[in-house]
Image (cartoon, rainbow, N blue to C red; front, side, top):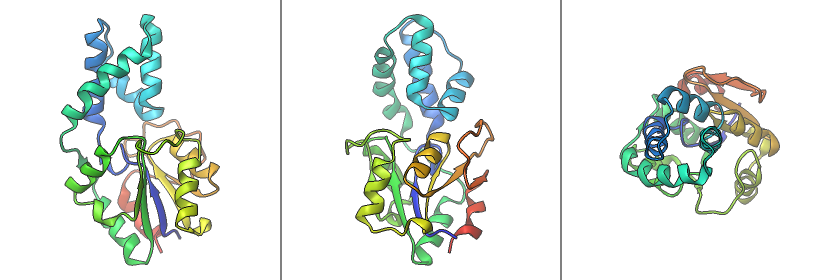
Length: 208
């Protein structure tokens, strides 16, 4: 049973992928290339936006920063108001109800907090790490260790929840469990999560 939850943001709490994919496809097209939404989504879900940038840049002989520049320009405009995954509020509320805590660990900037507020989820959170803080990227555990140490979290009661292997690896590197939310069962699982679910409400029996 877990009650100290560190949450990934994109693809875990809110479904931000539609706008992310649209922005990525547009950034590639603006440079004169082409990538299908399905391919872009698959690389992002299985690995990361950064891997997608490097993969497509290598294909065309570009500097991957060119894709990132275009992507970062359009993605916030396209994102507007991403929707929370079904059950997110219910799960976050139960964690608080049993005396637990919710923490956010995302590589997105502080827009993540605005999106959480729009979705009505921000009040459930006790602390946040965003791109505004200069922690190395997951699976490096530095950001998780910061939250765990700052709040004196009992690590056996803690878990990292995310939609990709790198989230689970980050949790394990911080010596806590990892729960994989693989809602579309697209991930080739290599990270040995303690739990795999396809819906957030499947986590409810594990909270206590």
